[in-house]
Amino acid sequence: MRLLLIGDIVGKPGRRMVTKAVNYLKASRQIDMVVANAENAAGGSGITPENYRELIAAGVDCITLGDHIYRRREIYSVLDDPATPIVKPANFPPEAPGKDWVAVTLSSGIRVAVFSLLGRVFMRPVDCPWKAADRILRDIPDDIQVILCDFHAEATSDMQLMGRYLDGRVSAVLGTHTHVPTADERILPKGTAFQCDVGMTGSSESILGRKIDPVMETTITFRPAFFDVAQEQVQLCATLVEVDPSNGKAIDIMRISLAEEEVDAN
Image (tube, rainbow, N blue to C red; front, side, top):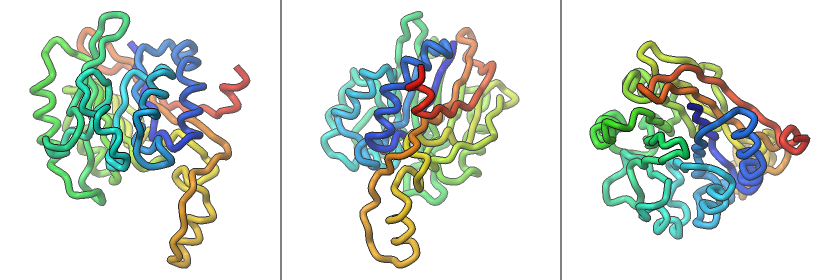
């Protein structure tokens, strides 16, 4: 079976790209399940219930989030609804809104577990992601073999450590958060697909999805500015993992970069 993780969706351009691309990718790449990190879907920071419904309607099967998860308070009810395929970082406190992991049943009958974790280096203070991973894996039923971890982290050292820590225990550890795809995709020795960062879905003519000029101005002069979401040269960055559903081991991993013009041409 084939799983796709779409990297951080930034604002309306990113959502538009997902709406255009998901069904195209499912058909052209024979993808069985699409997971998307959508913590920046609402104006570049956070996610609203409307954004959630838009992405699910576009064909996304499960949504992961990160450090901007609670920028829009109205998302709390969606996060707490046991029927919604959306997860908070599992190393947030138990009192924080949202589910630690979800299981999605595909049309084939295969069940896939998805969870996300927040890294610690250069990130907000948070509970230990490695201990949280152990807890989640104890909670996931033994009959679920295919497991995806979205590790939302800043430092590649954190990302690589999580990949090695979970090697052989999950199908894939794929990173999000930096918005820059890394060229280190591989299958680890015990059968876990790994990549430090999947990348971003939004404007490539930008600074991490935001317009270049105000970010440059604020960085150089310290004058505050509003970092508008950039609109030009929209692309989707994602990673495709092929998994043996009988044992949850990864067979192949591939980076995908898709321009909006390429989707429009098809």
